[in-house]
Length: 201
Image (cartoon, rainbow, N blue to C red):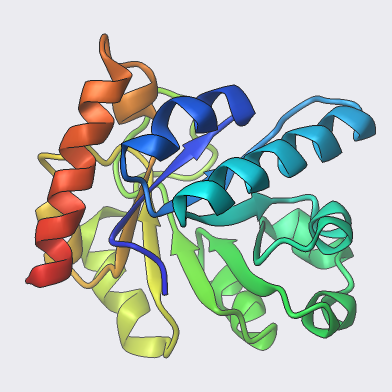
């Protein structure tokens, strides 16, 4: 079961900074790295998460996730098209899939994922937007046609999070709100306290 909040980090250094603060779910998204470094980052982050009882979601690298014994793998649409879903399931990995459009949602549902991500909910400054902001209404629309948990991502701040959950999301995934904050550890602490309240709601 995923926590109401999970951050996305680019490497094990960030995992080491924030997981001990009480993060219960974390996604590792390593970009533009060699195969050896990717495996090392996954292995180190897995070890950090294991010590602190944090669930780890490996982004994209499903082969390495299988080889290293990860629990979750998250795939974008391009990665999904090339992935061996049979191998992922045989390894016991739980699967999350990104969606942005109705067509992508249909493709994702065919894979019978353990969760579906929708985004960007709001405009985000982290990267150029390929898809327009989805908005809160789209969250409710997705939630009505899926039976698995729904993750909302993109431009979500701690101030916006209650509205995102109220719109139907089960979890909010966050990058920019903490990683560009002047004090990322303090911001993560605020998110951890918010998630605890959300779990009790």
